[in-house]
Length: 369
Image 1 (cartoon, one colour):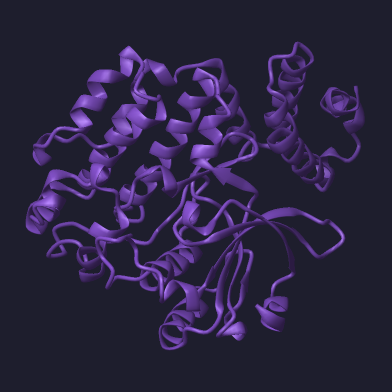
Image 2 (spheres, rainbow, N blue to C red):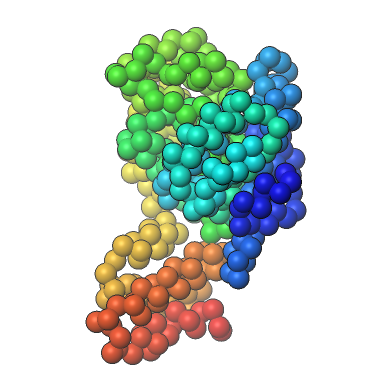
């Protein structure tokens, strides 16, 4: 990486797993180099290696570089609570285009053209700390945690379809990562494509690379048969809905909850016109758990007025004292939110005369007891 990596204010520490576990990207732990020493994950891809590595033995002429660049540029642009949060990016062939805090879409476009011409450096993406989905599944998450993780995934895909007007197109276990607080995040944007009435079908990039990038089991029948016009006419969700149906079986290790089975069957139907959109899936009772209610409450705290924040923290403090909150959620989600809330409240002039330490006290107790 050389000195070019110094353009990012992060250290690169130990590697986690092999690059082939992460679609050709080496996953490293790291920290910010400022006084906060914030922990991060770093995805690093060496372009000289990518240009030599076939996507699979079946496609020796298709190497990893082009999909890696597609993912690199899309990861810089897509922002949503259920997409892995990017803190910074760097193409060491073009260090002046480095971004921090996920900014710099014009730089992303500049990096794309420069990266295509140079194959000597590294691509680096700095994200929130995470582990691979398969590693998380091997840790035996509870049924409630599995349900919430699946809800995160569906919400992220719904954002891509409904708001970004994009298809992920590469759903498989290697396309998702999990944060320390148990949130599942979308990743691996190597095939992202628009689809819909204003397009003739998936982009040429998608059509060229989809067979090499996506495991066969996750490719819908119309993809296998290369019926691109059918995909465009059916709706932006159709390919991802099928892939999600296959993924859910892997998610629950072949033991799909009974209340979810009919929905999965509909997702897996070969009839593209009958394949449902994803948002109605969230109405399934399997998602209605105390763990989900806790997670949704934490999401709501961020947008609530100051007085409501205080009441919600007081209620949450009671739940924590009763041992109803998992330790990973308390440490990696509630503590940062609590710190942010206190900062917001203390900066609110109308609240300065109130006894904030008393009112927030039970929130502190949980971390000091």
